[in-house]
Image 1 (cartoon, rainbow, N blue to C red):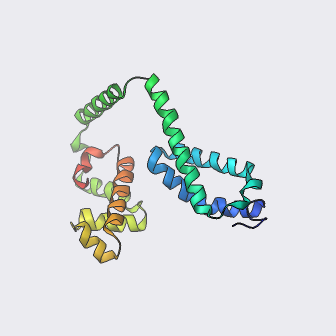
Image 2: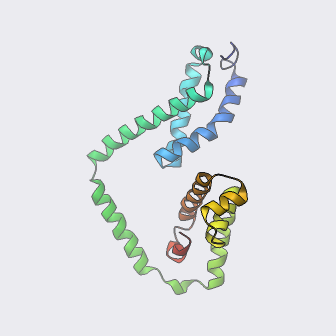
Image 3: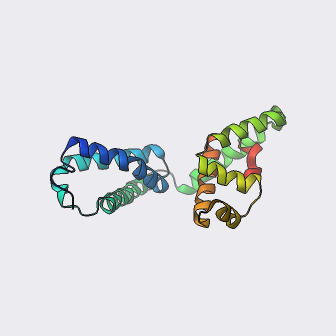
Length: 188
C-alpha cells in the first residue's frame, strides 16, 4: 500500500513518471505499432493519474495497476482505430496499394548505385545504432550464423530473449534501412 504522500506529491509522481514512462511506452509500442501513438496513450494515462492522484493511495501493487491501465488503453485504442479504419478503404485495398508501391520502388531501384564498400558502411552504421544487447544478439545470429540456442547459451539469456532481440533489431533495421531495403534482404 502506498503511503499518503506517495503519489499526491509532485516529487513522487515525477519519480513514478520517470521510472514507468519508458517501460509503458515500450509495452504500448508492441501493441499499437506507432511510437507516437504509444507515447500519446502513455501521456494520456499519466495525465489521468495526475488528475486522480488523491484516490490512488490505496494501490497495493503500482506496477500491476499501471500495466493494467495501459493494457486497457491499448485495447481502447484498437477499438477506436478499427472503427475509424472500417469507415476508410478496406484493408485489402490498402495492402494492395502498399504492395504495388513497394514493387514499383523495387523496379526503380538501381543496385549499381552503391559500391560494396558503401553498402557495408550503411549496414554497419545501422547495426551500430542498435541497442548494445540487441546488436550483440543480431551480430551473433545474422553475421556469425549462430542458432538461437547457441546465442542463448553464450550470452546466458533465454531463447525467447534472443528471439525478442532479433525481432527488435529487424524492426529497427527495416525502419533505418527503408531506403536501401532491397540491398539488405539477406540479413532478414
